[in-house]
Image (cartoon, rainbow over all chains, first blue to last red; front, side, top):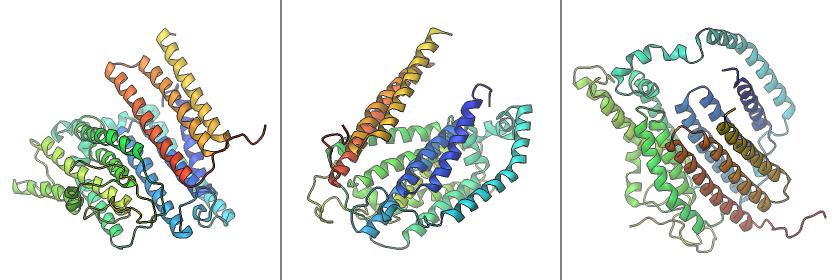
Length: 353
Length: 103
């Protein structure tokens, strides 16, 4: 932290703490969710200040964007279940947080936990600050063995090198965990609980026509640039997931070819990752030992498969865990008018056949 | 101080002022439609000024192009969101006030 930006950093940290407290104590769930999204965005700035741009990208897209959308989805489903109608806005029973009456015990518990946490973390923080004052903030990790081994990794971005080469085992397990999560989320087959929503009109359709191709291009760029600059598979997948969420929310119809292969998309990333891991053994190496000569190409291959896979996983999680299939997005199909009592409206967005 | 820094700083400060104005409008306006009005108009203008201030001292024309692309996309997204929110509010039956409560 340089001197001139110290006040900015202090204000940033204070804002984060205030937002966190407000999220937990908001009287209205909708307010809490909106504040949570804001918290994610302020966190993005904090990551940028720490020099972790890849994490900032992922935080903005997944932490603030997708998680906020998931929360809003859950809130809408809860409201639709409780009220049986359009989820109302503020202060209704659907949006009161659970246990809102027991505020005193909760407040005492939170404060006690905060004090304990500060007492534990304070000496650690002091030591970190002392060490940074001596050696400079980020330089201590950047001069590590990662930078020395970077030329052999096939990429020039140290984060990608660590994620997909040096510590590829962790990423492999992460992808497996994501796949398990989406399998667990899709297991109970239940009808999607959706309230009546306003029909989407032409403006949304025009917006999607402009923005979704742009999203795909930016995602492809992030995937490609992940080798040299902040980016990579998770960030590109988050962008594509945003496009998928837009399509799902606008009740657009999706090409049947895409939906038929949805399940294989879900497992594609893990499959390709495992294939590359085992292929290394065929050429005399160990499991997950990527040959240094072709490392760049293989990393790109793995990342491409991971992007598609993580996109499918995140969109499935958003769409209520139901695997998308047979030409139908789970909240409604595009063809039937009046399915939930709504008047027939033009479809918001239609793909070219 | 360099003239460029002064121009950039003035643009950034006035952009921040417009954001503040938009937030005050969000807090003070009576119903959802007027709040949408304040948010989208004031915030987009504020963002435009901030982008202008940053672009004035950017390193390359690619950065300038990216900044203006960001502004254009934010305008596109915020107008669409404004339209959707207003449409949903109208559909939910939130009344449009025709006169202020207190004179």
